[in-house]
Image (cartoon, rainbow, N blue to C red; front, top):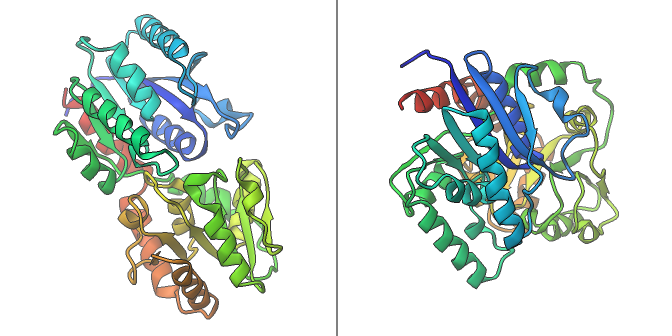
Length: 356
């Protein structure tokens, strides 16, 4: 493998939530041996001091025309803007993150000889918030874009299996957490007396299925439920035993997670959730819905609970509260240390990038 330094340009349309944590850790790990540029769009959940998270050697470029909503005029402007950024940076490698960046980037650099990579972080056509026709159109778009010379690098094995239905130019590198950094951050947190608390973390949106989270809380009124985050469906979290924090600083979010007892994820779909990996490292028993991303990491009866129904979640919480999940916690922690850490992730990406 070549050790020659490469100039890598990342386009990150959705720099918030788990994708933000992902790109921070990956870029910082690769900064010693590569010249890293990140062209990004801000989201409501992007930390106000986001620049402080990155190694000072990393170049940050805001893309003005990236946006969540489909707007053809703005998409054309975004194509022009990303081409202009690439012309100024003159990268050796371009890596696109999220479906929107994947579409814009693969159109913008069609015909280019630059090595081009794409990571979906959860395919749009798997998002059940969209109507079937829209999901079908998203699949067609992904299928056509996959005919380009780009290589799709999925962030979980399950997502990789979906990718192989579109193209054989595919690989996968698991999402990961910076275990050293997370250990230092959590070691400083004061542990407080608290009632048994079940928590989740992320945007309160259709994907995360807050209605299911609320039903579980209603069925267990003597347990405290905590949702760290905010979103358009916060109104669905009506149970009196649910606390919604809104968007808060990462240090405070970690403090609340450390002082909780169990992690819950009721999603309809996932890529590979960073919040889940962090909860596993913090030795929180985890109960997750049976979808791609979740069941790639949590294996029922081995390192946590994979749940098919509200009753499954309720049963899992009951077992954890009764102290019957210690064997799962230790196995989940070991999995993070060996399989889902950022050093392993960065080494795998370096292998892929340098194969060119």
